[in-house]
Length: 530
Image (tube, rainbow, N blue to C red; front, side, top):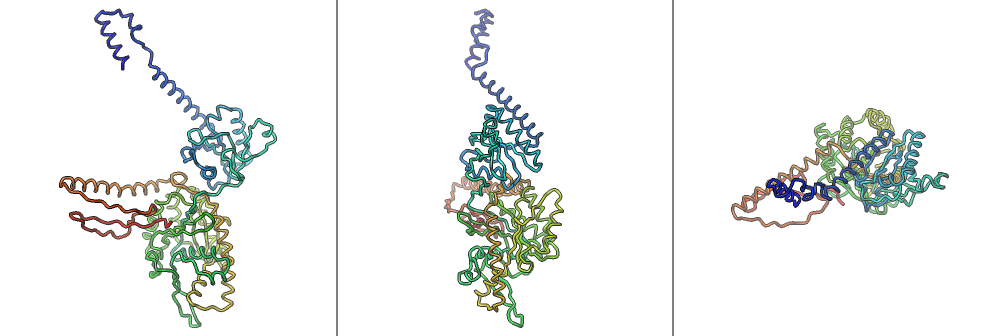
């Protein structure tokens, strides 16, 4: 500002002929201020760096690399080694990642080129490799050395490519992250979130109870002596005596979310999560859902899917989507296609890597998927652009009848010794399968919202959830204006709410009058049951 004023005064004096025109160079500096010069220099440097980055990304993509700015996927200073590996590798078994940043690249171009060439050579050997360039330039996480890391063995070439150890192709653990084990680290969160889906009547609620008891009691004798674990109330009919009379067996306290009175309709009325411990430091949160194939038709099924997606708005990540089937069905439910399509629309295309398949009542098929397997195989082939894994490692077979037997004897029902022997064998097989299922869940990585979990459908739900708070804000503003005009006030008495609670949009909202105002009350539910 002083330079402008000085120039203004000099020009006036020249016009008044107080000073000669030649003195303008002496009186006023025409050079840019140092701050402006430095700013211009910084801008030029930034532009050059961006141009260099654009060329690098283009080169990488032309060579078959996926470029990943790790700052955009949440990798920052303070994250653990396990968490960084978890974010970068996920569940993919064929990833090959190059860890680097601009500083390391510029300081040692020879080593960078050697690592880059080595990646391309590995790609030539195995065309299935998924090459990734993890760029730490813009992340607050400090990368100390360049490294190559694979999802198969989590080993990397830590030493310089030109060193003696490099010539002997000695593999070491990756410098980033400095994993203490060559195995892929386990997920670090306490909770394993599993979404449970299945046709109405397939026995999702019974499956949850049975799974918890199979993990808790190693054999049927222990289960009979102990107290069964009640996670969800269940009821079922059992045939008794030679006249084939039926008896209703009930297990657990009455739950308004479980309606056993309408045959053909989903017993589970709305989504609810159930948490129980499955290993040291790990808790399983199973999200029970209304079944599809409801006798009320496709419209009700679509409403149930909307209910599921609304509930998942409160979940930051899931570790798997578990589909529950019976092993001896002759035709898949017609709504299954729509269900899977909506899952892809909501979670994104990669969610198929997190599909899990469980079969109940598998004793009759010798604990195998039975006739349902070829039906599912043909069904999955109809998704031409998506490869849905359906293998032994993500398929599990249980027998809920052994658990029903336990509930029945606790209800004073009698069985002959031969029947008990069958149920005892079934219990033993189910325990082994439950332990395999538990071990699988404990190694499942997270499918995280706003990272892998991105879709237009999810954005639509987020927008819809913003509408009500905005309207509530407008209503409060209007109420405050009325109060201000009338010189009145409302005393607020806040109460503590659980962090996992949420407003229920299904419960009927009653209105109550407080002085001159009618207030429609909201109802809170504990959504995560943690």
